[in-house]
Image (cartoon, rainbow, N blue to C red; front, side, top):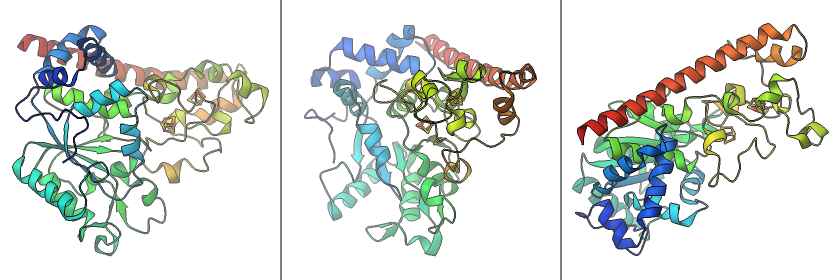
Length: 377
Ligand code: SF4
Ligand code: SF4
């Protein structure tokens, strides 16, 4: 069994008791809860409520299985730039099985998985990274002689909730790119009897995973999802509508080559391939590595890694985004700066407004859930 700190979380201990025993200060815990409340679309004022709910949580058991993937998602989730927050992330759960992180291997590791699934049947949270190869009866990924499909179906059967982390678990990602020789599919193609929460991206932002777990533990359920199973608090808005370079897009100020003056000035990357207009992701708001930066902030176009089939639909990555139905973006970029662009801009603005309204509605729902939770106290 893997314990993230030298202070194992005892089964009947609450999270509050566990953090106190681990030496985590109340100030750090409240700061963490405040950050999570903001990410979830609540206000920082909700931090004490989130803290109160989390403090009373008894050790939730998480089983994390890895199927056909590169381990990048595990790295992303665990390699937080801030050690104290990283500890808190790990302290939120008791990770009973993760074959990358646990000390045990081979028969002992598989025995731990079987024992935890049996002891916590119907109660554990299942986290899955990786796709499921279905071609040739699943022989492209086997662990202890069992195929990824068999392992996933067994683990999902006893899970209280299922969280797919990363683009591979979402739809297959790079393995599913044409011609998809292993027949890779996302986990929701295999798990048909319960909803799967998709925390997608290649890899996803660590805080997206943490905030979703915090939502589950605080409100006792999964957050509102979009039509593709992604939490609205994180994936409810297009990158293009939250991008600090949007003013340059609207003003017709584009980078034409990566080392030109426009690139040095930080202008819009649309003409060098940015897929932000067709990508729903929290990158501009959450950012990466504890808000150090994010791809567009560092001068690189978004490649659309949170969208299905992006290896096929968003490539070549440095080519300008083709026409996107309903957005009219290509026409906008070609005509922008001219008076004739006004109509097309209105189209983009309308789409942006619709997206923003949707996000605001989602955030209002989150706030309402917060209120309902308050009423139960
Ligand atoms: S095209 Fe890309 S860089 Fe330009 S505003 Fe949109 S998201 Fe930002
Ligand atoms: S900016 Fe785009 S490609 Fe980069 S991580 Fe975010 S969603 Fe993925």
